[in-house]
Image (cartoon, rainbow, N blue to C red; front, side, top):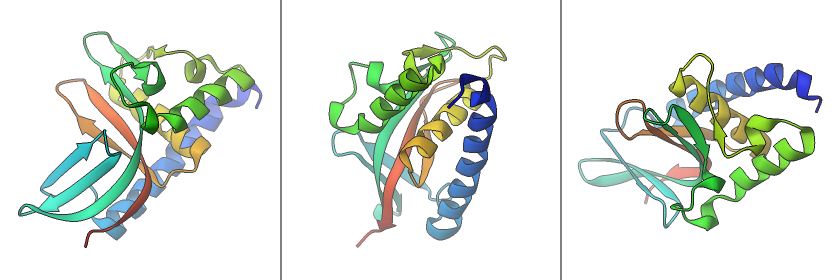
Length: 158
């Protein structure tokens, strides 16, 4: 890919992500369950109601935003995360290196507009597109902070 085309490509990836997430919402109720839990050691995202797990997703960890640092950190650069769920993020880094796209190849990304949530969704969308994931989920971690996960498989529990 030509690095000059990357901005349009990222916008397309974001549009594709929105369509995929809408499908996950329609088919599995994502965004409507009263409770979610993620288990980064098992690579699972669980959605439940009344202490009963209803939907189970296998995940990869894309990255996180930090209001304090005003940036995005790719998961492959975060030594606190389990390595077995970073393989897709590492593919994104390789894609960025091969195509001369710095924001996919460097550990930290800042946003000129200082809209970390938009930046997080756009970069998660790039990962979903590169790795052909089913969608993405943002786990709130406090004001301005978020953990972005991509969904590899999803099914009803039970």
